[in-house]
Length: 112
Length: 111
Image 1 (tube, rainbow over the protein chains, first blue to last red):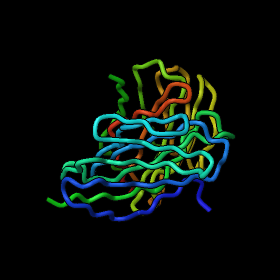
Image 2: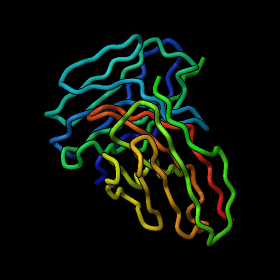
Image 3: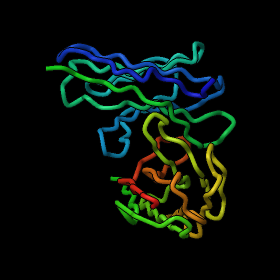
């Protein structure tokens, strides 16, 4: 079992809809959780960080963390074609200090 | 803004060559990382450094070594390049417990 898992997609949503991206992790002691956006041919870009249970909102993005279920999600409201990218979940595992482990990413396609 | 700079955007090297990939960050971050990214395999950690001269192996360290003599600089070394090391190499840096910021990437082709 991978330490950080994501559905590879593609996840296709119409413009203006809510896109919901999910990630599960295996290490119950994980401390820090991040979402990255990666456009084709570009480097990953950090878009959200979350450290405690609950929701964290930043503009059209909301990150949700449920440590009991070992689950972190990213909601994108009012999805735009420019949101079409691969979204990577990353976790700092409890037994590895500050080492970041990434999921395989979910490809999101927002159709006009 | 955090800036992480990788020395080359594209590199072509011959099998058996020793290859150096350089990375510099300007945010005084303790942590620096080298990943490689291949289609269908995602981001895989090669090495991680949490302080000068300190390093930890990641998931795929075989065939690679690293050097961190100064806090801002983290080098990845391919001791004897092979064709299966053709990949996109990404350097990143972070503060304690914080998200990492990536360089622009180096696309290495070994022929």
